[in-house]
Image (cartoon, rainbow, N blue to C red; front, side, top):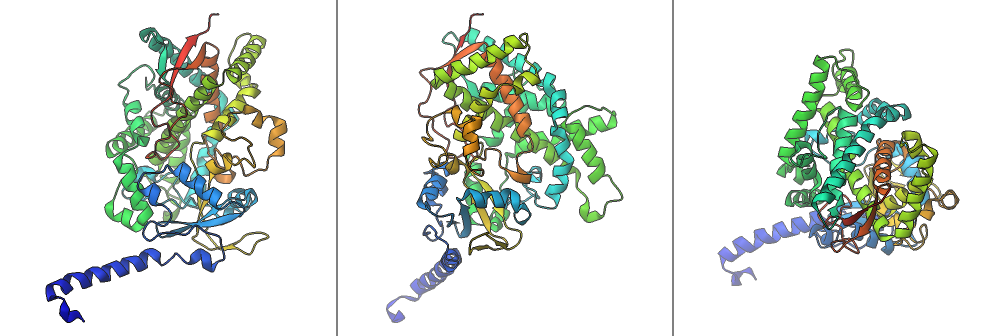
Length: 512
């Protein structure tokens, strides 16, 4: 039959066909996994699995995971495929609690790949696997005790005062009193993390040319690099290793590596001691890098110490500034909630002689509810990821989660499940009253994660957010303006839940 085809045609068609068949086989080899295990799953397509719309940037991961979550309704878990890689999505809060807390020893790692030889700043607490993760977590945790947070309060308050000055100056220059709040909150959170964690005066709030602010904004800014990196990771970690795409922009990475290394080195040489995060890092350096009694396999590197300084900065400003901005957005749209919150602030300030201190902030119960509801509607990340380090028998179930299996816990989808949060699109702080919280099953509200890998800076972030919101709401009313986007749109290229077009609001000074 091949005699009908010219030889040159066969020389092209046959190799192409062979390559196609090998590629097809490789891409679909894993597609029978969930069927063999009798796990409900979403039918994949060759090459893309279930991620075609995400890979093409058509659908935001938030909407994608939410659609998968509802397709698996009625099941405790279900299977999906990221390209050819099988993932187990867990919907059941009981199993989620087991994975994150009770049986954490089976799932200590996130299972998120990063090539540390290409991305040395990613070799940090977030990406590290056990046992290194546990060692560095134990070293860094003392930086966020209640006592340490109290010592940091005055520094945060100074940043809050600077924020108020900047807002007033911006409004004086802008006669319509409109402001893009995410940018302003980003300057504030950058200054807070610089001052409290690293003992640095960054001038990020008042100086438009602040290098920390400039490079910090670039870390999470949607870009072609991020899209290509995510696509490469979906195809295979091996492919990502070949193309050597960086997790962060090269220029920004070099700046932060140099800045943090110089800070640590300067303080070591000059015997400077402060109650901040750098001091904890310096002790970790002495214990894990310079300690000659440690076995070689237990030692850390200088770069790993710097990488953990970097992750505290990166996580400490972007997620916090975005959460505060979303909170102000919701309060601008819900005047009755804003008024009630302001009344709580004013009432408790009068009892505290007008002083805003750390004890005062702890006592603002309605503000806690407002922030909790903000983080329900706008969690910093849309999902948690875990990887099984050994075979795990799911309690009261026939499923065995095999060693190496990757897991998705869909935070955003859980937060919008009407079973746990009725009318989930509505902003309602009452959901987090003590009475309502006691009715709700644990494992359904996870803005900071949970268990041993819960966000290490959770309480620091809450303190920082509460101070800024108290300062703003005690002096200004916030309202929507012509530029306010309703409903808000999320950036499809961002790695975190981020508004696509910023958050514009109007500020109206309260007459004292």
